[in-house]
Amino acid sequence: MNDCFKTVICGIGMLVSLLAFTACGTVRGLSHDHAELVAWYIEDVARGTPRNPDELVLPMTTPEMARIASWLAGSKIKDKQVQPRQIDERQKRWSAIHSLFIQGEVVVLSDGLLAPAPALSRADQIYILPVVDAENLDRRSLDALIISMSNSDHDGAKKWVATTAAARLALDTKAGATHWRLPAATHANPRIQVNQ
Image (cartoon, rainbow, N blue to C red):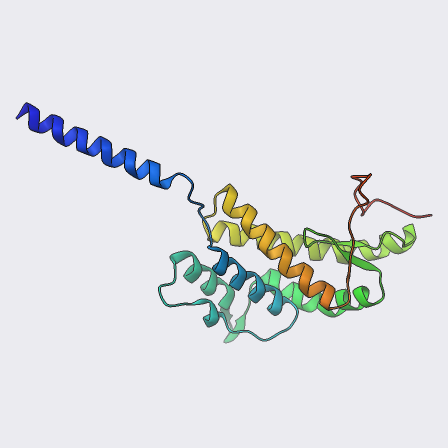
């Protein structure tokens, strides 16, 4: 009986070690394909392109994807389907952002966030900043929500941010935005860099 007990304990210990070993190196969060699908879905809808949240419900879907799809479908309020607030606000703001891109007054940065064009006067930057700040807040809020709903670890969160930044950069430049990069010699924040 004593040897049997030792064998069972040893077997359990080896199983726990094996599970711990196989868990090392796996990233929690959305797979690359799922992250791409969700990022492009959100960015399309935020720009007014009609999409259906059922596109995110795939065969053999993960609980995280089902949760995200359900959230993106929105909810009914007084018999009206309402999408998540951040997406709704971005959709309402899109025509103004698009105009600012075309006029060259707002640029997109490599991280997918926006900034007033560095060549603008201080007065013009101050005028544009509330729109840019509101858009960036909603973009980052969406990132945080998706990272949370996908149960991402640090590496999964980094993958999500990189994936959504690439989608935003592609769609913003297609809509007329200039991709602005910091000069190599400086690490200054473009939002406070003012030409006088």
